[in-house]
Length: 93
Image (cartoon, rainbow, N blue to C red; front, side, top):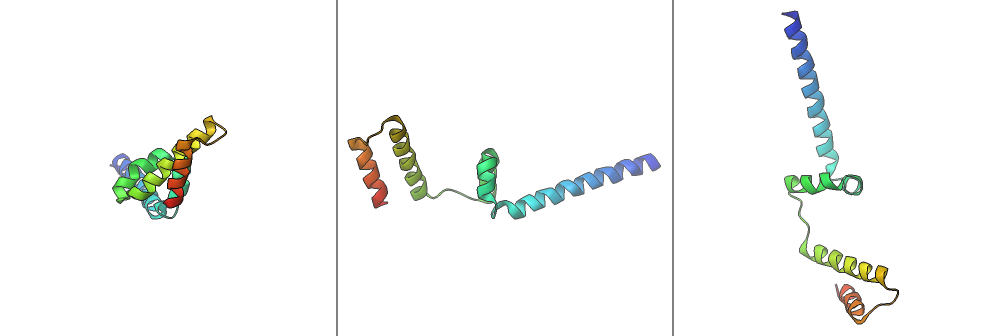
């Protein structure tokens, strides 16, 4: 009887600790999302839909354009005509 009680107490304590850790993570997720995004991007990718966080289409398009321009600049030192058009698009956005 004592052995069963000890096992049950340990299982309950582990469950309570896990529940507390999950609650703490959930409370800190929004304020510390940038930190989590920087250090654990896979976690943010999976947890954002659970929290109902979606990227705004305008921001997504803007960041894609910035990445394309950055990629072009890393390959070449000078802007091409297409690069200048992208830069102009970014200014307009």
